[in-house]
Length: 84
Image (tube, rainbow, N blue to C red; front, side):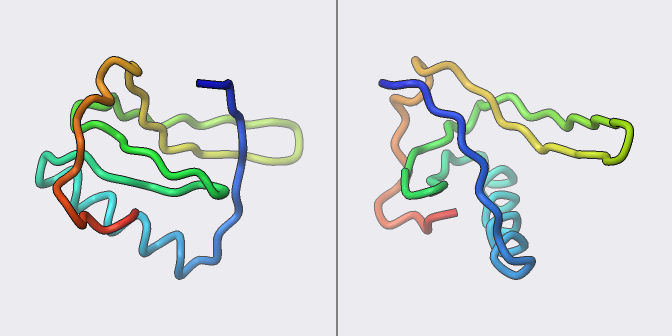
C-alpha cells in the first residue's frame, strides 16, 4: 500500500451526513466504509478515536481522528453497508 496524505473539503450537508453515518457505525460497534478523495476503505470497529485541537497565530483547527493498525483491517463490513 502506498503512503497517502489528502485533505478533502465537503459542504456542511455532506459533512453532517458523513458524521451521522459514522456515529451510527461507532455506536453499533461495526466497521464502516468511507470514501475520501476517490479512495474507498474500511475503518475497523476497534479504531482508536481522538480529538486534536491546534492553535496558531491566525487560525485554529480541530480534527476528529480515527487510527488503526493495517492488521486490523481484515474485518469486512456487512454486505451493502452504506458508504460513510
